[in-house]
Length: 279
Image (cartoon, rainbow, N blue to C red; front, side):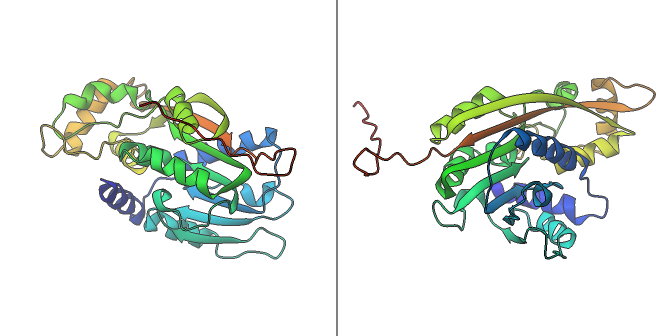
């Protein structure tokens, strides 16, 4: 299923009319949440897509690794970060998988993830991805992320009975918090915002939905092609159309958590917690 996700995203972002508004808007809101956190990272892994402000935020000029599992999005990121001025943070770009991060354990100060967790949730690989993020973080390191909630595109839920069309079931913020706790993160904080997107027509809406991965990747129970005319008809019936425009809800989920600092005993020895399972 991940292969389908990668193919779909590469197809969207290989076109000249690819959509970036939602990614950039969510990145801006995710950046704002860093203002209340005290940290001075030396190495940041920036996963996902969108124009973040990490280069300007930290005075220590950390090294930034741009990371994405879709090479088409990474090519766009690379073209935007081609020139690094001496006083700006250094940035390199790596194409890879959150489930198999090519970095040493406890080597990264901060992992910044913008709207890529929904893809791993849809592929049933979110637990493994969070475990990998926890592994590469240094003790005391920060994981901060954005995702999509279950009310995303609620206007189109009635359209899911149509042939060949089904939306993803995004996790709510409570489930994401539980997933982070299960991956051994400490002090998770999760909140939610609602963003209403307005489209001029059904074609623009469809392009955006495909770009941020809200169309389910599994083969539908009633397979077949959903033409643009059929989608336009069901979109107009399912949404709150005003002045000929279509509205769509995006439930944005934001969160952060820490890899707990290493505990040291009074004798200077590392403390390791061992959980015993009952059989």
